[in-house]
Length: 174
Image (tube, rainbow, N blue to C red):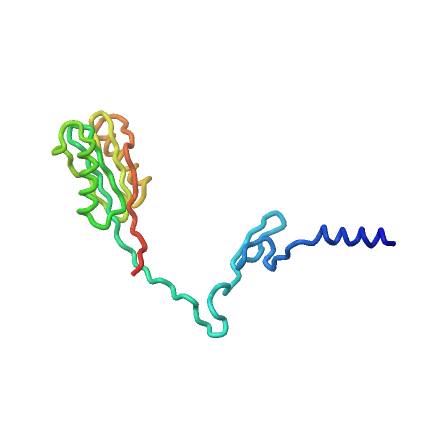
């Protein structure tokens, strides 16, 4: 009888563990999903402040969308190149790209020319057979397609993308 009691106690101790109200999910989340797939979902109202007063503990931070500029600068008849994204103004973006181009200029710093300035969108720069084209559009695939098409028509052969990047608007505190 004592053996059975000790065996039962050992079994209970071995099986005991920490109990979580939300199961295997972090605090503020509950288990959902199916038998084969576990997912965690937020508990409605969790962390929303004092439930007695209905007040949020911290008000949301108001934000606005600010325009972001990008630019592409190349060196005429040389290998200098500059491209930037995420600047607050057209002048700042052009200036930063121009500085990059001048730093990589192979013929003359004075030969760096702004090829494209864009805001809240993407740009691509294609090159081939001595021809280059900068294009900007709503996304990289569209900008790339436009640059390759224009460059190919001018060069008479297939061009390749040398650069692509985006400068989308950014949510900032009001």
